[in-house]
Image (cartoon, rainbow, N blue to C red; front, side, top):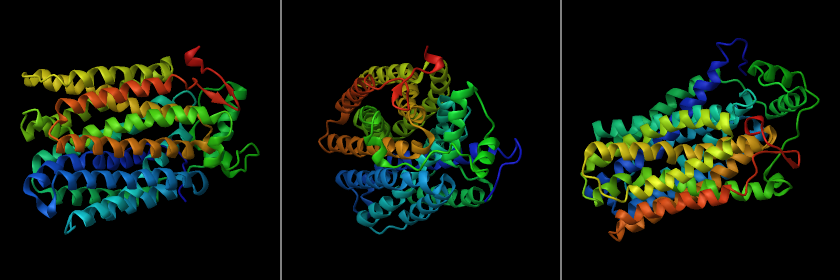
Length: 434
């Protein structure tokens, strides 16, 4: 397998994991961009009910992938899992373009979601294995900017080629196939047990950083301090159950917001009286705001403590989502309001992932991130389903924004019970929070 022998090579994991998140960003918004066209034309038999089913079943696949496939990264390695996930997602995304009806369309989305659901936790676990101590916030948010760059690129592409919805899926799948040979040739294996040994060494020595190459070399040398393999059963052992509940509820609410907005925002704005092109533009603006928010959130989290910033971010998300229920006549003010909302809504969920990376040891990191993402996908399923029900009942505006604001408030409540940091059965506060 590839190894890292220079600082130049060490950048490959950063960019490859980032590009994997670009694919996740594509999947995040692609249904939102094509649903208005599919409902309007009735192609493949789509209506509001069919669109809701397709959006829901897609997220079932993503949730199952996060819960049951992502933990394999702690046992088999991040590299193998990432390659397999990208391959599966790409093939079945292209297949969606050739679906003859709603049922087959949805089935292909389900299978594609299995790969994509495991991709995000594995990529974030990989990056945190290599991240210098004290940089979990920036490492996670930097990687996740790819998520929203992909969403922005997909929204921009939709403005150019919709109503040709089939081409959207073909382009997304081909992008994944192009990425595959680079993952195979340039991505070093990540060894969670080596990261555990590194973290233990940092705690003993009080160090603040260590090159990624040292992690790989220590693993190959058979570090005696390497942590044993872990699994979901470890989440049931002290001190993790309360942490898992709080993180799970917050992830549920966070992904309810992310997927609910990205799937239905164009349709919500159409119900409010805006044009379809305006709705697609706002979807793009929302995700541009998300990228800006990720950069800011990562810096603030590492400087002031992840818990403080994630609570603030979810709280502000609730405020700005509620404000969007007021119809804005000025196009400039409307775009500005959606941009600011994007800053807080999407980086809130990413901060949850960053916090998980800090709370759990490296040998349990992939499993914990898979749990957070998997439980969160239940919210991702509920978000589009609830919003789709409001669309079908013709009450999505302004009720949809009230539902989203309530989710932000519930996330704040859940996270207040989670400690700043947990290590070896006791709670400690990181240096940045003292």
